[in-house]
Length: 232
Figure 1 (cartoon, helix red, strand yellow):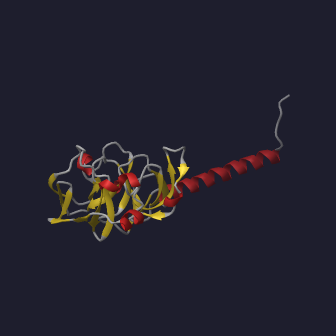
Figure 2: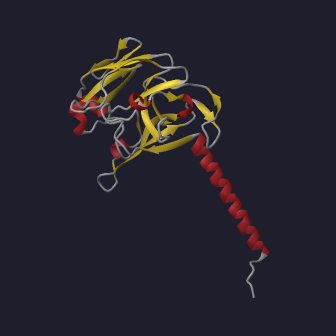
């Protein structure tokens, strides 16, 4: 004899499963279109963002997309120089975190690690002790950190003199609808120097803060000093 669940139980389970599916759909739609957090697995944004940081991504910073796609339903802003954004790599589709260096119409070049935008060199200076504290620069990065001024934003960059990474390139003009991205870890970052310009539609949103941080080299121990810190 086959066992049959009472009709009331079957109806309850069907309703519960339907409600669960709707809840999952709503939650994932919000994650896809409104806000998300992004785990940082590499050091390409050192010393600003380090491995194990979980950063908050505002997906409504510039536009509203159709959930689960890169199709724009509406746009109300564009990334600006100096902002940190999450985007899909034009090379392999991986999600990356970099800083916007150039916007459509800009000319950009680099000479001995110094950037020039629209023919003008950016301002650089050696950091002060307060910079290390304000930007949460870890001790092991201090000797190789300098401060860069980009579009009224002040942020640290990591310069490793022994690296063989691309430290100079000729002037490039950024096309309409494209952006030039670079990591703050200038000598250990796969960025626009290698994969070229990033199309506007590939930009997911603006990274605004570190939500939590876990030390991946120390049994994922929480780094509480980095919790809820805004990104420069």
